[in-house]
Length: 136
Ligand SMILES: [Zn+2]
Image (cartoon, rainbow, N blue to C red; front, side, top):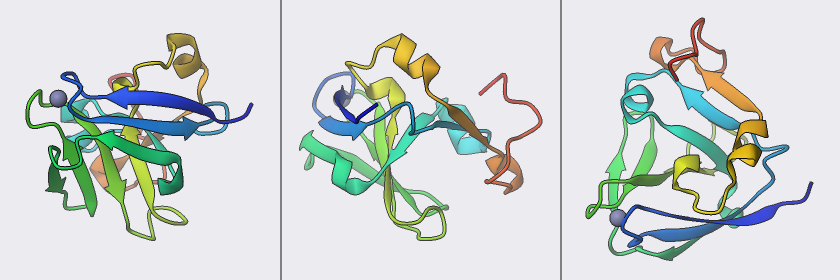
């Protein structure tokens, strides 16, 4: 399957983007670290070239995390739309981690068919799945 262009936004639509993603080969990710668990963060990581911020560049609130990610949050409606990760040791290069929940035109069947990886961030064991994932 080739990449499909999806469109995403926050709840109030002040922040909008498009992204090219192949959900057959791009896994979605869920993590049990405190930050991800409290936000119920479900992500897909893509290369920056496949991400296009179309609105909200000056509106979005950027929050730096301890792990080096830069969260991009709409200050009007509170939706965390995406984060950027520049750390080289996370991946083989910079990534944009989009919230799959912010995608407006992703059908549920495609999302459920996409592979999901789980990260045990709570125990600083990021590259292995935690023993329990049902709550993520
Ligand atoms: Zn908003």
